[in-house]
Length: 183
Image (tube, rainbow, N blue to C red):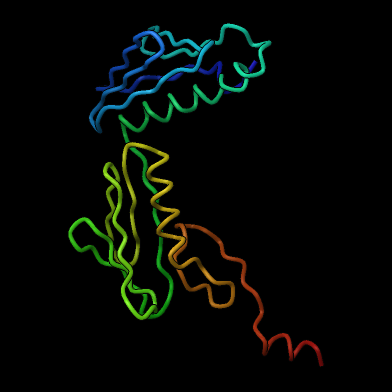
């Protein structure tokens, strides 16, 4: 039995969950979303909670999809209720970010500014070299944050680049420190 799959999902205020066969529709203040259930997995709503059940846990495919379906449904419900947010910080002298309409313009030491256009459903905001990526779909928010970080990942010598808020970058000793230690 999956430890994650058997946990009930609480439905927040203002969120409605409707089950129609193998399709689950969730609507809330942040928008609407759908999830198609795999074969052998069913969903029931009881007392303001959503319960995910599997028909045959001896089948490997159903057992593999049980916890995954519950996690995806929980993320969908949370996304329609409160949403998701990832924060990135820019470290480096002269590195900056600014919004140009809905696009993000990054000055990261390249010969030209780099433009990032987020997909629909994802919003990007900038305050004091901190980029906030938010939206109702966890996968889209994480993917957008990873694509922004990929433009200039933090380098190990000075730590310059774009990193997640709170991320620790392993620093390396430079040539001078290695030469002094070798004597």
